[in-house]
Image 1 (cartoon, rainbow, N blue to C red):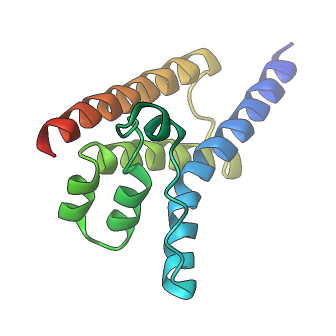
Image 2: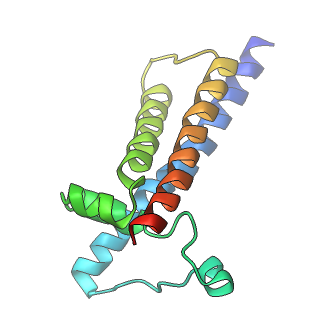
Image 3: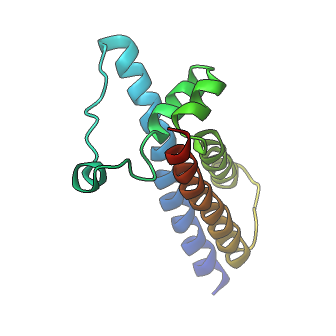
Length: 138
């Protein structure tokens, strides 16, 4: 039974790495596309189109791009929670890479899921609080 649990945990880690890795790679890909092809993105947000205000995530990608460019102040201006959210996702990705590709065993599966849930709730809370803050600052 232990080997199935380990296999299930590995599958879960791979899925989490794909999900969280995509969250980090997307801003980097947009930055490269912008620098290489002067691509500025679509700028389409269904939430904004329907409600007329930015969604809680509006500005996170641009904030991450500014952070990757080394513009920390600009990253906070674009979305106050951007640098924190990007840092938390990077922490998750680093842990998953370490756990999947080295002999590092990591946390016991139940504790790992609880830790991920806590980190993701912190990122989500920061996102909403940053969205509210952004509304007051603009």
